Amino acid sequence: MTDLPSFDDRTDFTDADRGFVATAAETKITGESGAVVWDLEWYAFLDGDCPDTANPSLWRQSRLCAKHGLFEVAEGIYQVRGFDLSNISFIEGERGVIVVDPLLSAECAAAALKLYREQRGDRPVTAVIYTHSHADHFGGVRGVVPDGADIPIIAPSGFLEHAVAENVYAGTAMNRRAIYMYGAELAKGPAGQIGAGLGQTTSTGTISLIEPNLSITETGQEETVDGVRIVFQLTPGTEAPAEMNFSLPDRRALCMAENATHNLHNILTLRGAMVRDPRVWAGYLTEAIELFAGRSDVLFASHHWPTWGTEALTTFLTEQRDLYAYLHDQTLRMLNQGYNGAEIAEMIQLPPTLARSWHARGYYGSVSHNVKAIYQRYMGWFDGNPAHLWELPAEESARKHVEFMGGAEAVLPKAKAAVDAGELRWAAQMLNYVVFDDPDNTDARDLLAKVYDKLGHGAENGPWRNFYLQGAAELRGDKADASLDTASHDVARALSVEQIFDSIAIRIDGPRAWDTRLTIDCHFTDLQQTVRLRLANGVLVQTHDHEGTPADLTLTLTKPQLLGMVATRSHDGVRSEGDPQALITLLGLLDTPDRDFNIVTP
Image 1 (cartoon, rainbow, N blue to C red):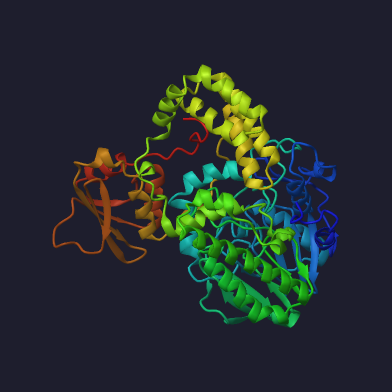
Image 2 (cartoon, rainbow, N blue to C red):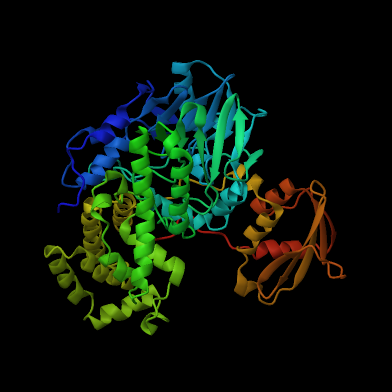
């Protein structure tokens, strides 16, 4: 194919090495227990030639992402890269240093700050900027900010609400799928985990959060922080629901957060999230070009390596903009011709200029699943075919498919023939039916695991590879346990009372609660507010209207006591009046989320 980037183009490698200062002498980053949460040598094998167990394009991207150390971006601007999935940036001010996006884990952020200080002096942290509401951009904050420090913590409007809600409401399921998406539990190596496209993988340390105290509420808002002039651009609804870019006009530098990185990003991340809006995303990239590109000499971001030169960064932003706009517009064009998401994903092709650009490759998001996400955003899960309106659930469907095809003993030879013919996608579908019909069929599990290995080894997309290989591991009996909890104590403390009660409501076992009726008033002495909880028809509703009727139980407590009560189901220290059985009944109706549910087996 002619519309592929040239492997002879070494620009990315030159840019990824540019400004290198030093890396850490100690390669292992450990937590309090001594467990390794990150190792800089995990991906040393990528220095070798690409094996036949990896897509050469993804191997190339992973080599670039695995470069680690402190890098100078511009005068007074530094990044530590390769210490986590994301980058941490340091902007030197008059008194100290402003930290931008302090990684996912406190341990990794502390190690990055230590490296920076070893090379640039023991400068105090004078401010923190969160560019957006994903945990890999705020979780390490307590690794760089001492307890009790009184400094600006800057974030886009809506940051806190989205940061905590995403990690609590559907956090259990998202975290489970994130294990498959990032492959953090897979063995690192040429046949195993080699990267995630956006970075290598997620660290497994301590996730923290310090609440912002300076909110960016509009594009053009200018703040002077530690003597550094910063101009912000709000970009809600792009890569994150709360996100912002910013310019350092006196240094002619532009930070694009995660809105423009060296890959096609996700419209719908495979770990799960709300579908993003590529039309809005493209629009904010156009605005960034108009506001900042011509006034910038370097562009850096929360992942990957910088782009230098006004012309080069303008081209980069323009092509990134065109990438999201093209996928959006062409998906809409074809869905209006009657094609569904799966059909469009097979038909669509990128324009040659974009297809030949390394930064437009589908290392993290893919054209295939992004197109399906755009279709989903506009049309929902139903493609209009009534055969798909009320399909059987997976296990029942599998049982009937296998029976219809003559039983597992007839399906397996056909699946083997499909594998031999290179029809791996079809083989995976057939074998998945057999596994869901009979999870104990070891022949089917083994063959499906081999198919997933082959599909993973051929994938250009990092998360696709990781999903396939982690799925193969589950089929072989090695089901990865959850090792990362994004709903940390800090995140929980940042929840509003309304969000805490929302998190309780989604844990109510509805059928068991159908016939239960109760009301509980919660008076919060620290917040000076009262909330009434009403349980009926399996639904827990919160209201500030007491309806003129007494509650079954009145609790007088603080927000921390509420969090403790939810965590332990104990109400020690909480003052109560009325029927104590109401609280016991409510807590007894809470379901326990399964952090380790199966994904590729029933």
